[in-house]
Image 1 (cartoon, helix red, strand yellow):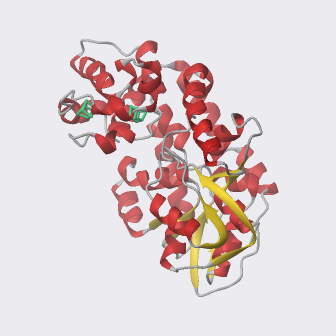
Image 2 (cartoon, helix red, strand yellow):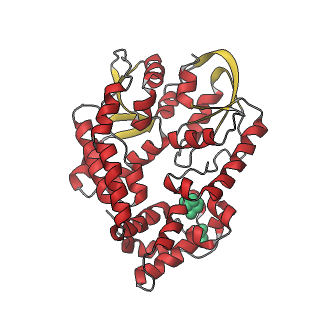
Amino acid sequence: MKQLKEFKESIHSCSKCGLCQSVCPVYKITGNDCTVSRGLFIMLKGLIKGELKMSKKLNRYLDLCLKCGACSRFCPSGIDVVDIIVAAKAEYFKTSLKQKFLSFIQKQIIFGLFVDFLNLFSRKCKSKHFEKKVLYFGGCSSKIKGDRPVVKILNEMGVEVINPSFSCCGISLYTRGDLKGFNQNIEKFIKTVKKYNITDIVTTCASCEKSLKDYMKWTDSKESRDFLKKIKVKNLYEYIKENKLKLTLKKPVEVTFHKPCNIDNYENIKWFLNNIENLTYIEMQDYDKCCGLNGISKFSEYKIMTKIFNKKRNNILNTGVKYVLTSCLGCEVSLKLFSRNSYGVDDLTNFIASRI
Ligand code: SF4
Ligand code: SF4
């Protein structure tokens, strides 16, 4: 588990060029340097040197960061901004009783009876048997929506889907800075995977994918790191592209797609959408710009997040399509909240599986 001070060199490598300002969705709305990596790094430098104390105000700026990573992709110094922000959140977490209490509640939900309760009612779909097998990490969304769409699509490709009762990927603990809690979550995940002799893990949720791929970076245990090296976490659409699966929808339909900040495999999704018979894919302007949802700060910073979303909404409307698809439960919630019934919002897998 890397501490904030271990990022000292990365923070110092910021040349203050300001390129991050041109891509940061929060900065574009606030115009405040404290809400983008450049300004945040100046404050974090002060914190590491002991010239500044961790405070609610600094935590508020850290919370405003959507952890979308857009600034990292443009940063000429190659700074991994999200890791630094999470490490800084962990510093605040150590000092805040309120955060510890909220995390305690979250863990009861993630590890506790609530998940067992959801598992009782989650609609698991029976997979057909094939030689090729994958473990499906459905995350929280599959407990609510069921795994039928993924099973249906993968079975068509000749892949058996094993769906163990995984708990949450733990991303909310990570973004809150509760890295100890996040580590407990990693161990729980490893324990479940070890029960099966399968190394391919497929997910459809962008947050789960990002979280699972980051387990290696944040685990404290060498044994866990060695185990994680052996498994391959993939997004469903990498599978589809690899197998060159051709699908035909029952009726013609036009869609657009919102790319969640934390997926890197848009090219696979685009390939998939462009290769489905009876489906026309229209790429919206700024398809990859953040939807504005960032868990708790969505509600505490409502005005800022609303402005970010209104831009997204206009881009969707300009395509003239009836459906916007995405592959992250958080984005789906955000897109629905602000759609004002102007278009339908659906999970990409769900939408396709229900029309083949
Ligand atoms: S783009 Fe990178 S180097 Fe430039 S100011 Fe932002 S964080 Fe610093
Ligand atoms: S991660 Fe996203 S929201 Fe945070 S500073 Fe970078 S661009 Fe802005």
